[in-house]
Image 1 (spheres, each protein chain N blue to C red):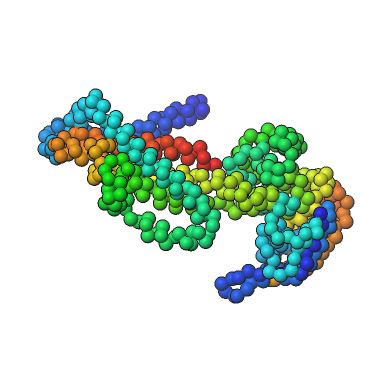
Image 2 (cartoon, each protein chain N blue to C red):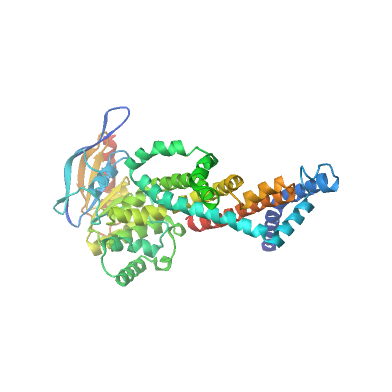
Length: 250
Length: 259
């Protein structure tokens, strides 16, 4: 499913000034099956943009078209994986994972449970299916959240710095797993991050945002072959170029 | 070696934790005994001694009066509490969910809430006469607001990220309410019920002292006018005991619900 972002402006009312402009004149097309990273310093409006794509907020002007339809409200087609942990604390891992399927009434109960168990097995969480979220580590919680969205067959995954609270080792592991599922399910992924390394590792296309007000500063295509190696020359070179680019913006 | 040490430490700790809360009650009973029956410093009509109280308790148990009056009070407490829950929980969900409705209701709630439940006694007698109903009404008035306010709070405090997650997983508004907001408000509702039951107990006793011919409040009041202070104290302790038991039950329930 492709996403077209057309002339998006977003401003909030603030106390000091009348209007605080967060995003200005954003135009961007995300192709079907593409993995795009929104990269930028904090306060550049990257999360706001993601929320607009999700339909959780409405733009001040402009429109977003996902799969031919203007985004007006949240939908099961565009799953969001939040930075904060977002599992339902009163449900077990298995119940959390099948939540979306129940909501969209896809499949029978037995089928859903079987599918959930298959997915949980594939990321090594099957032993925790009857655990509650508070019994899991941060990395496990985010993996369950991703599984929850994948199982729902959301063609678009919107991810808002989902790995930022994890330690480096876990973060790298989850990035690798994400690439794995993305290749398997061919979702369109929009991934918000402030981490250059993460963006270069994951993205087909890096959209660099500027702040005050947030606008697109640059779009970088990443042609490095997967699996990407962090120590390879081209990886390091691209990373340095982007860091330089970001510094200039400040 | 070290392990053994730790274990015995733990046991001592455990023992100490169970013992410490008992020290003060035991001291109070000793002092109480000394100034009343022990040294006779206080007239038994002003303050009955522990032995008198035990005798009163025993005869009240034997005659069945303690049980009937306790049950009578509990019926009223539960009657009022259940009625209050039936009204307050759905209303609280509605007001917590629809901001406009809350804005409409907020002034009325703010004015009615601080009125002490006992202030409704005159009207309760006028409207419901004497007996079970006026007491239930007063308990209702006492419990309905804490349960309502806690429920509204619980609904409003639902983590926004959970609501948005549900929406992006395809949940309809109705499912967001049923599957996200309700479960997440449950701990607050339980807290409201816990507060409500404490107030209900207080209200019952006051209500029974005025417009009633049964229950622990009635028993306390009549005993005092019959110069039977032992029974009065038994009634008071009985109420305290009921309070402790409810508190224990609700605390256990909260432990199970709070994630």
